[in-house]
Image 1: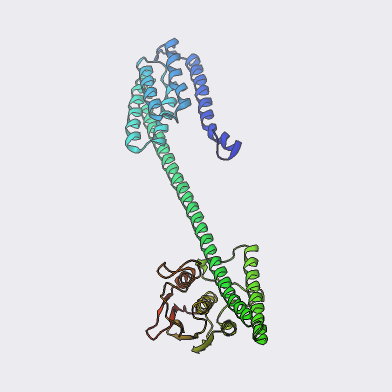
Image 2: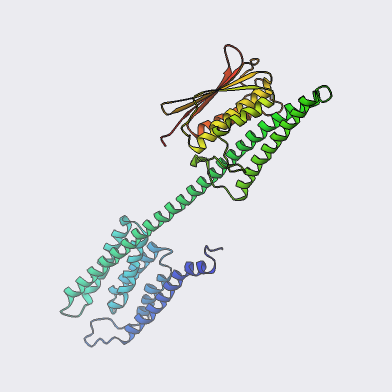
Amino acid sequence: MAFRGGPWGAVRAVLPQVADAVYAVGSLAISASMLHNWPDPTHHWRDADAVAYVLVAAVYLPLAVRRLAPLLVFAGNAAVVLTYLTLAYYHPVVVCGLALANYTVAAHRPREVSVPCTVVTWLVLLWGTRLAEPGIGALSAAFVTATAAVTWVTGDVSRRLGERGRRLAALTEQLRREQEERTRRAVSDECMRIARELHDVIAHHVSVISIQAGLADYVFTTDPPTAHKAVGVITDSARDAGDEMRRMLAVLRHGVRHTATDRTDALPDADGAAPGLARLAELADRVRAAGVAVRITGDALTEPLPAGLDMCVYRVVQEALTNVLKHAPTATATVTLTRDRGTVRVRVTDDGPSRPPTEGRDEPGHGPGHGPGHGLIGMRERATIYGGTVTAGVRSQGGFEVDLVMPVPDM
């Protein structure tokens, strides 16, 4: 059997039983000595004999297991003490045994059990006061009454304190489990956030590289300047992807410092700048270099957004433009930003061929009707973290639209 806390835990577990055994043997020795040596010049009590010693042993030795079977020990103790007092042996030597048995019941059982046991204790001890020396009968009755009352009160207080301690321990354990669950959720949310980051970084830059590599291969011999320009765009995109990957690896190397519940997932790039609307023009230039005309219109958003929200808007725009690159590489894309009454709205539209809203995803092998892929899911997950919404669908006048609406908290 393993004990919590190692060797000291084992010692603490058996110490009460050892203490009870020592008390039982010690009390038996003291009581037997008193029974043998206590003078009785007036012959108020029956002379001690073998039966008296056996009864005293039957009172005290079972107390060694009083915590294991409180009611059984009490019942046996009360019966033995009643027999002992009825036979009129020297009565004080058994009072402590019955008192401890009564205390044990009060300390380990509810009041509906302990109160009747206390009444039995009082009656049994009161029966023994008839053996008191002349002149102290009333004092003996008061003493046994106080003994029964005090043992019940102290035992009941001990029980309630124990129950309170157990409730506190249960609450502590519950709080520990809840903290572990919150930690697991935070780690899971952080993993999802990092997965979104990796998806956004890789999907966008790989799309640009793929398109430009195809263009460079196509015009390699017929239009060297265009091929050279495409190679330059590939180089820039690869470098940007490497910078953002180094940023992500730096975060992982130094441990997770932010969680989704913090709403502060704007992590700095290798150059110290976090992806955000301040880098929107740079993103547009990269997409233009890949062949898609991009226009940015609407409010200038001169008032800064919270860091995490700023990054969220940037990533949604990045993903929407990446999907235009994939599915409408000859289209013109328009990014419209507006801010009004604590709300930021971003619309990314294109005039390319219409496509079902289930397209625009990044998983190989997903075709129309298979449900949204990581791209649209990632946009919606990001928006949900900050209390926003993302809708995507075919425009009535042709092309595709991604519409992001985000509440802006007071800063």
